[in-house]
Amino acid sequence: MLWKGRRESGNVVDQRSFGAGKLGGGALVIGAIIYYFMGGNPLVYLAQNAGSVQQAPVQNTAEDDQRKGFASVVLADTEDVWNAQFQKVGKSYPAPKMILFRGRVETDCGRGTSSSGPFYCPADRQVYLDLSFFDEMKEKLGAGGDFAQAYVIAHEVGHHVQTVLGLDRRAEGAGGSKNAASVQIELQADCLAGVWAKDTQQAKNVLEEGDLEEAMNAASAVGDDRLQKMGQGYVVPDSFTHGSSAQRMAAFQKGFSGGELNSCLN
Image (cartoon, rainbow, N blue to C red):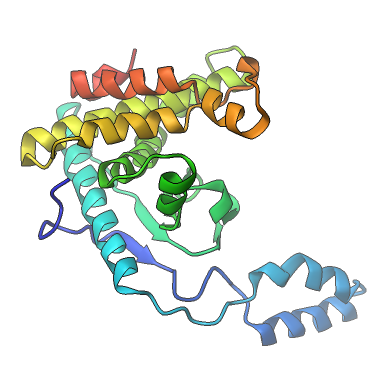
């Protein structure tokens, strides 16, 4: 993907240097003392809040900074695509912020960790990303490449589009099981990522040979059937929450072929 030298989004918030803590060590101790005088067990308070202590500053490497630049360019591309797509349907697009974190992070949806992978929080309408996830994709899932990484970001922004338009609530209220609704929401976000890829290519001609294959490979790598097979050795379709590898690839391709928001609404 050709990304260097292009516009970076101003909606990236870098919280990597200090981990995710909201409390300093001194504040944690003071909180425990106050908790004690209010009749509580200070050990319980410490146990509940120990994970919120700020970590020591971490120096970002040149590779870290390059990854941030790449993620910022991809986010900028999503802004351009969804601004244009929303204008077509007479709406304005409120771009999300993307929070870069390391290890753990506090959100309005609760505490997030790197182990959960990138995620979107509808309560604060922000995308959360630990850039080390891209190493996990390459090393453990066999889904390397910059366009595979771009697909992941575009998928999470797709959840933001769903939240803004109420598409997630529509899926949840359509009846059926909770898992089925979750699969529908995730596949639609894959479709929206496909729209982003098509529109970005048409407007900026940024795709290089093999990029689409990287995105399709990433979509396949995070299919429920493949992850279940890797994790437990067998597949339980009724427990799917994101869709099979085939479904996820087909959803991305649907969005890429259509290139319009409406392509993902049916």
